[in-house]
Image 1 (cartoon, rainbow, N blue to C red):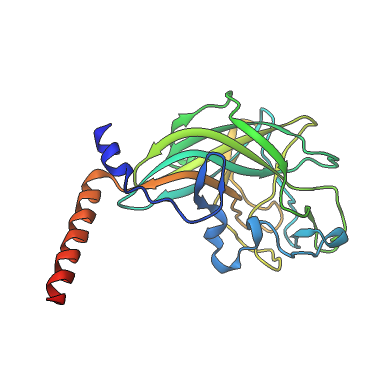
Image 2 (cartoon, helix red, strand yellow; image 1 turned 90 degrees about the vertical axis):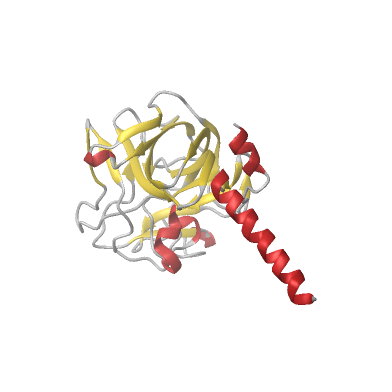
Length: 263
């Protein structure tokens, strides 16, 4: 506890938008680099019905969304805590939709974190499949975001929602996987995959999915393109104590050198 306290004053709060449970630590849309559109799913801003944002499904991809809810469906993707840092994760944001929803329908979320890929024998180190950690949900974006065929961009059956969940875990450097399942008041929940700006049937990640008792790669059924999922993690990034002391020492040395050069 003392070590963490020594570093608290050197916490690195990322200068990004915040939600109630912390600052943004990681956005999986960043895995697409400059190819990513807003939220990792908008392909054509203003390109949907009535000027809404469009998340276009482009042939030969045929899967608008992957099952991410009910007792049979979960989705997982990876993230990495950089070397030399710790992440105090306090929450996450996940995206989903239910078909023909007239109002936000997401009412629950369960979250787990793994050390290792669930598909290849990873181990759950946090969370479970029963505890509802969702704290709020609503439509995504200041304007509606619709998932629709590129050939039918005015379709409004799949308006994307977000689910904010609050949970707490501290992770050291390394690669981890997060899996989630969303609950709706109206049935199945589907997660739109990460999509590139402008639209395109291309690989966007390496997510895996759990469906009917087993894990498999999250690939489009027809094109075979592997997909990633849009999610965000919130909290605080800190420097563990040894690094804190080193950083403080370097800072002090720089200050002394600066004073010496001014003499």
